[in-house]
Length: 275
Image 1 (cartoon, rainbow, N blue to C red):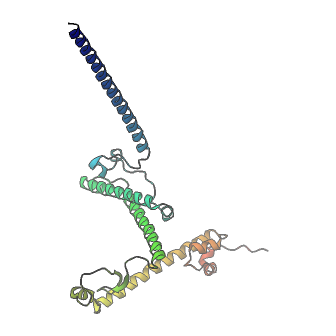
Image 2: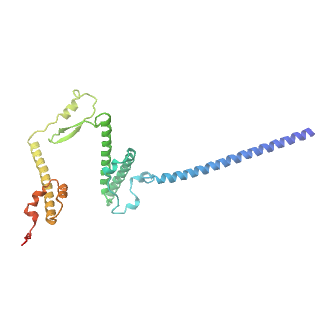
């Protein structure tokens, strides 16, 4: 009888110990899990704050990224900055130029989408000059990247690294740049390429076109030179004491000293004569 009671007491003690151990283990697990969740939430908040501080574009909104900010839709004019200059892009690193290229590409896609949508709805597209500014910025960025590529290839290989090209004549007798490209067949076996490059210009119509085209280019240069000459003449007439060196640097195609002796430069007035 006594031995049976001892066995029951031992079983109760073991059960109590096991229950307390399981309870303690569960409490420790729950506590560590809650602590881990709190740390994760805090890290997410800190990460969101730091990421938001370094964002350079809007948040991802799906297809709405192809459209402008809704507050600019009813506006007739959107205030924007100027295009990126070459001097500003030359001091940027390659990583910054890469990021800026995608920002400009995204902006161009958005502007073209808005322009198409406004034309479809027969509405006014606000500030259409933004497309030109983005295009100028992208062209300047490509120029800077090409300069760096040329400098690198010249330093490493002694060549520019660009595709070789040469000036050729088209069927109208005008020169254009032909860039070489790779072909599967060699030149002496590629008859299609030989026929495409066998281009000549001749005939009365082509000669007449070239004569009229040269005349047009000459008239454009002549009118531009006359405009510059008239501007210099007007400046000399209104400001007799103007800086001639500055005027010569601004208008290099105009002979300022010759215009000083012209009657039109002096204006319609009688010079003062000391008695």
